[in-house]
Length: 213
Image (cartoon, rainbow, N blue to C red; front, side, top):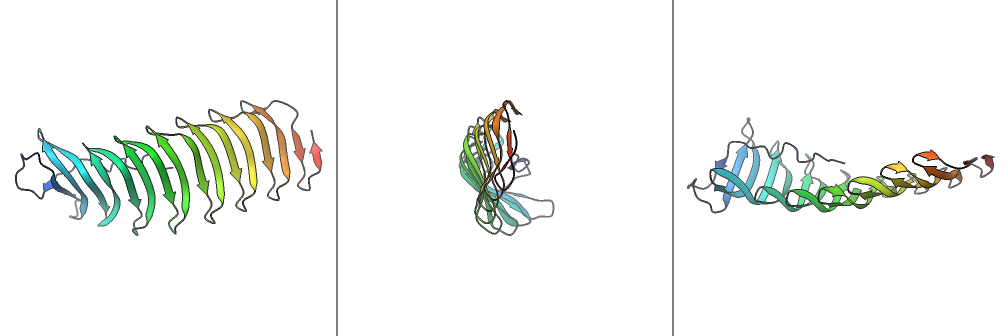
């Protein structure tokens, strides 16, 4: 997932104001430009003690194409932000609060359909995080706690059948463990303790017959 999605996007550039009074603290529209003269940013804001404060609508451009848009509050991302591909397709939708990811997050495939979705709390993933195959079937379900995989983990084959079902303890497999073949038959059955099998592991053939214990 794009953890550094906005890294480098909010770099200060020479600001060209569309207003006339540079000492005015009222909101107005600012623009910044690339070295080649193409528009880079367009945002609402004001001047405070000589600093440009982004406050209101914000848009970021690359190659004259809109790539990001959202709201800024005192130069911090706020509310729902949208991220677009170079061919103007929506690829991410992220919610912010005071500059941190907070709330729903969705990523889309370039041709449409959800690729990932989950929820952030104060900048960290929390709760169930889903990934999907391009055919729409679920690829994985991972439970997060303060940004760390902790709890349920389920992985699926592209045909929709379950591949792995286990529990994570701060990112490490711990507890009942099941792994399946792509025909739905059980492959491995056991219990893990901090990543290693803690009891007799049962291994099965694809036809369902027991291979070893």
